[in-house]
Amino acid sequence: MLSIGDFSKVSQVTPKTLRYYDEINLLKPTSTDVKSGYRYYDVSQLEIILLIKRLKEYTFSLEEIKQVLESEQDQELLQVTINKKKKEISQKMQSYSRLLERITDDLSILERGNKIMSYLNTIEVKLTEVPEMNLLYLRKQMNVNEYGHYIGELFGRLTAEKFTPTGPPLTIYHSPDFDPENTDMELAVPIAEQNEQTRTFAASLCAVSTYTGPYTELSSVYSKILKWIEEQGYTMNGAPFEIYQTDPNTTAPDKNIVEIYFPVAL
Image (tube, rainbow, N blue to C red; front, side, top):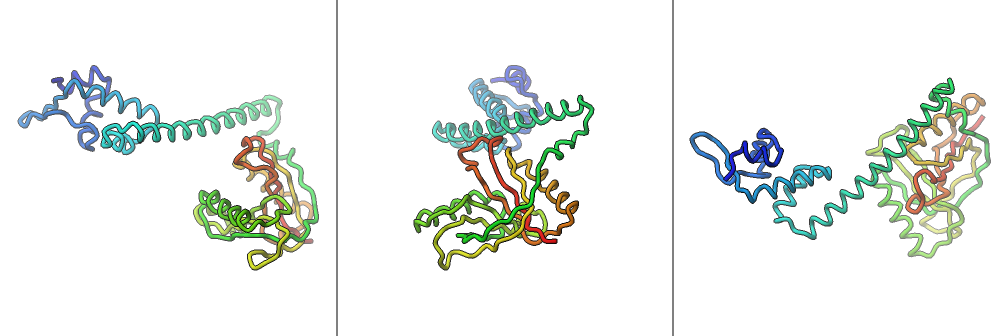
């Protein structure tokens, strides 16, 4: 048997943390002295505390670790869970890699004596006529995290009905403000067939900008378009929409190509 001090020293986990693990039933000592309250651990529990430490390094939450331990370290469950963590960490690493690139670019801009937001000047905006389109559509109040589910539903209908696409997919943003948890979005694909599942998207005059890169930077393009609209004496005349020239499921984030449209009028 090991005292909590010895167990702490060998595992390099503080007694305070071990007491907390006991309180939340993550790792309970083998025995506790009723009079003194001293905790004692079996040598075999060293393997458990080492597993806990490793899973914490993998960014597992304590609740997730508890599920693994309660499953008696089911190997299949452990493999699935670790694979999920691996994917999450890979996504974070990609995000940090892009962030590091942006920081490097911004430092380069500052070193040349320019303002950090001067990149906005490189975003080009022009005026264009968008022709009438016949849309297969799905409009919902949704959390933006549900986008993948609903676009999958829309493409499922497209495939099942064997409709003929006539252009790339688009998203129309009907909400008057930004609320990622509850936003009015219309997902659509232009198709040749007309029926009760389709609607006519009217032709419109639009301010448009083509952007290449991760979707997280689209707000910069939106800001530039709105500034351009004001400077050119136009007013907004409908819901903005995006047309996707690349598939984000098969395209690297920095290679995504999306066109942003704002309907305008004089």
